[in-house]
Image 1 (tube, helix red, strand yellow):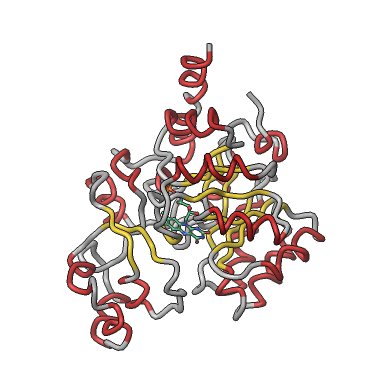
Image 2: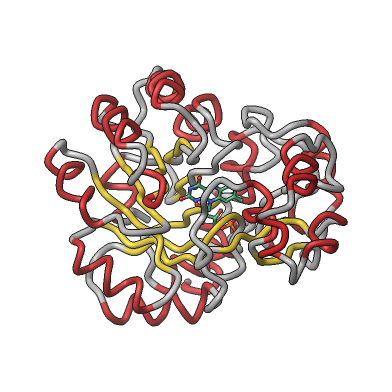
Length: 313
Ligand SMILES: Cc1cc2nc3c(=O)[nH]c(=O)nc-3n(C[C@H](O)[C@H](O)[C@H](O)COP(=O)(O)O)c2cc1C
């Protein structure tokens, strides 16, 4: 059951461990790649180029292919992030959230496969025009940042119909049934984040893992409250999906005021529990029932073949 994804990178499973800022450092990335998927380092706007070099070296140590996810709006002010990535030469780089078109050619010239996440059909047209190698269809149910316009399934069908480029599906793939579904639709694999949130190899704090395990599928919310509080510089057009909490409820609808509120900012950046900290997660969070390892998660996803065979004979 080979796909473009498994063949291009020599994977045992058609699974990309999505880049997740503050979660997927070098250890989780390496563990996913070692267990048969393609791990991706999540380089957020706040990291240094040195962090990318150090964690990238950890991700590369085992010799398995891995990827790095950059935030396009942040690379604009951090040319050194791109430089660090070009030095590391990972197999795959994703550029999402903002104008990434200037960076596609230099990455491809270094032999790197370039991906971007599309949240609408218009985003997919832009990706094709920018010359990316693979489009990640990111539906509204996904965790972390992106758009909230269209769910994974309608978006996946629409984008598969418009391009011959390889397409990966992201958003709500919480187990092997979901992976089988997107493969059956024609995706080359799943781009999966939330399912890896409780992995021991990740950077997630223990109190956050506990809250993620408790959360059910109705506990997430999409918005810009946490970005208004963080002052990281996220463009308003990209909100994020995270667990709803008292901090979110207090500030929902008052994002402009929060941007200028020092107390709110301080409360957010010093938070050490789930009442004020942002725990980014998708609707698939309801399927997280325990602390895991990357190998456990991938072993669970490997059952996708059973579901595919059951419907396809
Ligand atoms: C905690 C968290 C952090 C994320 N950070 C990033 C990031 O740094 N860069 C990026 O391109 N996408 C990021 N994402 C989005 C993922 O790449 C992906 O779109 C999403 O996790 C897929 O949906 P799922 O969470 O339902 O599996 C993040 C997602 C989560 C849950």
